[in-house]
Amino acid sequence: MTRAPSSITAREADEQVAGRAAYRAVIDRLSKASVDKHWEPYRDIPWDDPEYRVDPADPRWELPGVDKLGGHPWYRARTPETRAAIGLWRVATAMKIGLQFENLLKRGLLNYAYRLPNGSPEFRYVYHETIEEGHHGMMFQEFVNRTGMPIRGMPRPLSLVAQVAPLIPLISTELFFVFVLGGEDPIDHVQRKVLKDDRPHHPLEETIMRIHIAEEARHISFARHYLRNRVPRMPAYRRFMLGVAAPLILGVMARIMLAPPGAMIRHFRIPPNVVAEVYLRNPEARREIRDSVGKTRELCAELGLVNRFTRRLWRAMGIWAEPGTAGR
Image (cartoon, rainbow, N blue to C red; front, side, top):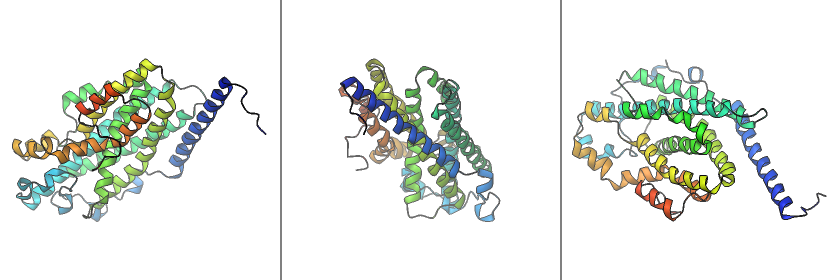
């Protein structure tokens, strides 16, 4: 029989060992899952199958209900070919922004892994994730290429500012993994909703989304467990700074991931009043942004990063919801 701890100090040490052991078990499980179940974009996606051909006029590209423009009278009044082209542009832009974000993420992960000590379980997992994100970037870019559309992704000024992101792990790994969740959670939220609707999906889009969701589930899980392991052990002043930064990062990232691309608006001459009605003044669009970071918001509250002061920042960024009210 294991002897009971003889003091409060010993008991706390036992709890820390148990917590570390449980955390390591999660990392080992995620690494094993990356070996057992992964996809190769040029092996597992039949790009040249006629059924997978990208036709810009295919009606399956029309905007889904999760995109509020799809139900607007202006959009419904376009020809079927134009509606399909707008939808395809939207999908391709989301993939282009996704691969750009994952490019930043990979560089940040490698900066984080560079300083890990020998024997660190995180090292192996981070390299698994980096490889998977590389595969995602290849399949996203291949999709964009096959549309034949002039997709640019992030606006140039934002892209320049974003080059700072890979340096975040050199300052705070906890802040970096909040940034990771800020990019991954909104896209995961939208892709899951799209796949749950009743409309037919193009097989290429559906295959890419299903691969992405399956592998991103591991990436999101790692980020969440990393924060659960690290944040409680941070000094109080650093936890406060992280609590201030989190809603700012998440609010900006959710809008980057879900906002309509400016190039699409200009290319299809979508009137400014329509954009305002659909995306700026629409309560449903605002709720979509708020709900897209719901899981990360709950995690931040669980970790004690939400207090009376930081809650104001969550509200100012338009991403606060009382616990248990998301999606209502």
